[in-house]
Image 1 (cartoon, rainbow, N blue to C red):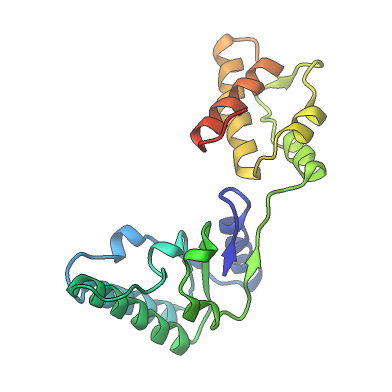
Image 2: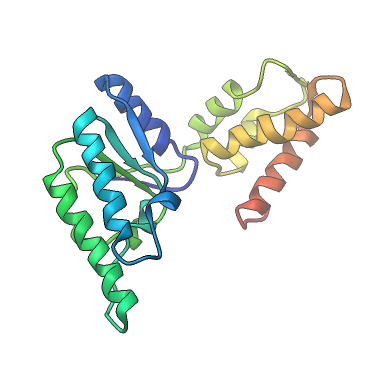
Length: 206
């Protein structure tokens, strides 16, 4: 199980494991798996695991807490069947002759019974300042050139951001502003505005 904040490389690491092992990594789209109809979720999961065993795929469950969450006290039929889904998953994972990788931003939401069965629980922390500086330096797109006044060291030290957020700031926010302006220069104000918008999106403030 991979756990840590969004944008810290959990999905990328799953893909790299597949590449290293020479196996395809198939991401499970939970919106297509989880059903409101009783018994359908188990059927969908059964097909997924059967296909993975047959083809030798690595199964990757992103945002796994949505499916592997803690079981609740039973107060109605919905709770009972939700708990049955979790129990079914436990059985299939234990009997699965292959690799299953789970990724979650919310480790504490994962059912304790699952945690005991993982061979590895790997934390993906936010990058430290030297790592953030490297991400800032290497993330600048070729289509723009940084203004000499752009202080990437300051950015790395001042803002505790994930790698995914840094990429969003550089490519989706700041570079878009510089290209729209027509000069292709990545200015400090472009990056600062990009950081501000990304922090707002994450519910944080400067």
